[in-house]
Image (cartoon, rainbow, N blue to C red; front, side, top):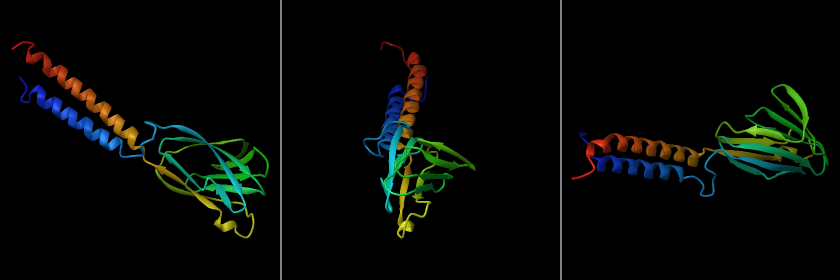
Length: 172
């Protein structure tokens, strides 16, 4: 017979599930449980990007499309070796990364690191050009981690119950 009774094991498993749930739900309430794919239109215009801040989670995939409403702009994303040239009134952009250049309608970016990454205009577009910048904020995926921990805790609790329950006997 085990030193711990079935009640103790169930109580420990329940505590593990509750703690994992609290860890998982400490993030944003409307967050998806795992990495998601999002399409974002980045509009460059006189000295501003729209949206100025892009928020995502580590593991997410961003499909970035670009548009310029006035002159040629650039989109340089620090920490990702990405530089995009955005011609006015065109869907196609020139994408330079890892020493290669290609023309494309979208840039696919898999977010593998958490942190704040500044993006800025990389083509001189006028007197206020140095102030044309924004941020990509990549947060950790708490909900995914918490859900994973809860799943493992439930598996361990079920395994412990299966190993202890046969020795308990069905009748008293």
